[in-house]
Amino acid sequence: MNATSVERPEKIERLAKAVYPSFAMLAGMELDVFTTLKDGPLTGLHIAATLGVDPIRLHPLLFALVAADLLTVDGERFHNTPESAHFLVRGRPDYIGMRHLAYRRRWQTVLGSAESIRTGASEAPRVYAEMSAEQRDRYYQGLHTEALEAGRALAARQEFARYRRVVDVGGGSGGVAVALAQAWPDLSLTILDLPATTPIAQRNVEKGGLEDKITVLGADILRDSLGGPYDAAVLRGVVVVLSSEDARRLLRRVNDALAPGGAIYIVGWILDDSRVTPPELATYNLQFATALDHGGVYTEGEIQRWLTEAGFSEPIRVRSTAAYGGDFIMART
Image 1 (cartoon, one colour):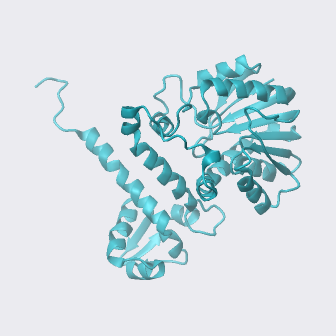
Image 2 (cartoon, rainbow, N blue to C red):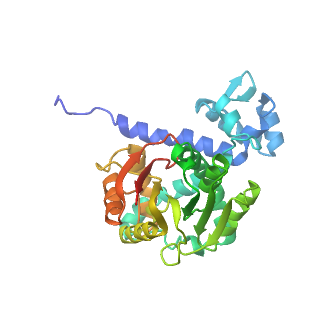
Image 3 (cartoon, one colour):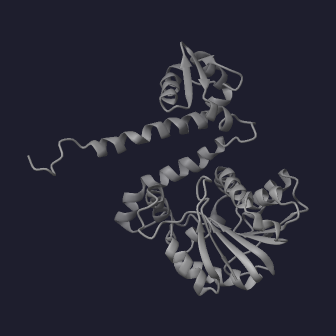
């Protein structure tokens, strides 16, 4: 037998099976299974009655969630694991169950990758300004806790004690700005995003009682004034939805809006220069390639080069444990 021959498609089969725990998690989040168990173990029949769902169809899901290590089972009674109890019970401080809105959208997008490649057509126009109000609200509900987490990771940096005026360019749900304002009460923050998006950010600012610290303004960040001068600018999840040309133009505009010595933080998905690591980002990039006519997960070298061209100095990459795009590249004017 040839030393390089392979007897079984083991990797192929492993990849094919890997999706099922994820889909079980998605169904559990969408049904809000974990919240029903907030006060302790229940039988499958009790869970089904509480949710108002078919107990026969729910039963396999509950055991799938046990297999996925999101529930435990003792006899006929199911219980949350410590992680699901902490993050997936509605009403608890660190609840992230609404991320199912983002997970479903991302996975549905990636399922269309082959067709997009075959036809050369993306899902566009999935342009944010063209979404209905309901679509836009659900879109940002799914992203908000991720933005908060990235903002908290960024806020852990002590140089924010020196800043007074910070702009969140393309701030979306306002999660990054909210996290920064909560961590650094002396900051004055401005969120800039399309007028269609600003009501969502404004709602989250008001929910946090931060109206006196955060100003939300509608603006086309590629054309309208960015204001300033600011001590720092944050761009999370912005560069990935822009063409390289527009990204470079935006970085020049941000440089103009910063005070001398000001800092820029490009927060989000960053590939190593090999384009294959981190592997989860190399594969995650399929959703951008399918959904958009331009943009995607750019490499560290590309972003650093664009920053230098825009007049920034000494760009450095900082890795983060925050979920979904917490890494960032920082540079100064």
